[in-house]
Image (cartoon, rainbow, N blue to C red; front, top):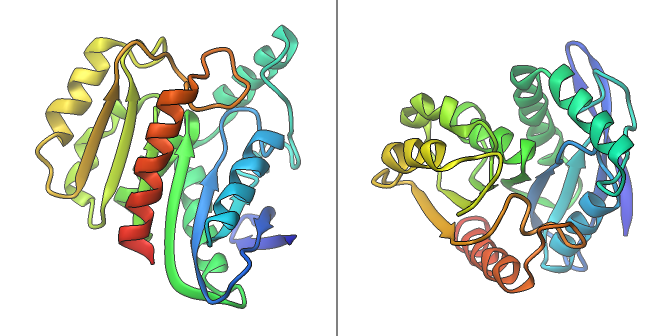
Length: 231
């Protein structure tokens, strides 16, 4: 079953896609979008988490730019649009919106109080920052672009974080990955996984760099991680 959640902030309200599990009560997983908005890929990921037994909530974090943005990665025109949205996006406000989403999602009828965050690409960065700035209970980061610029916040991490990085990521080069590894590899609450030979968005089903085997491995690790920390 799917529905819509309205999230309130001091700056205005925005909507989130909600997929409900078969059994309640259940923990929440907040699913954070890539640069294409809350599109079919993100709704599909939320639906998959609901099948795993979570209340999955995917907030429209581009609402400050334009509510309801939903494009794909299939055309050059859409890629240009996506990068335009990325450049216009306010990361700090986005993290505040995730904090508001966590608060609202925990109030959904049937939520058990536990709430995790998972994000991809831009959403991966926002998930990492959610680990340093929000009250979520567990965080799963997929190839968070720009994370290397924020690892100075690692001391604020209070709950477990799992991070998946593509070995040949065109947007997170080797030097940036080295910064992330140096800052987080020995952190008691972070778990780092590298996928040699993979490129950015290797877990995006249907994407140009999708790798079924490593996507399944990363998703299985995340499923085990959330099972350990949210259930």
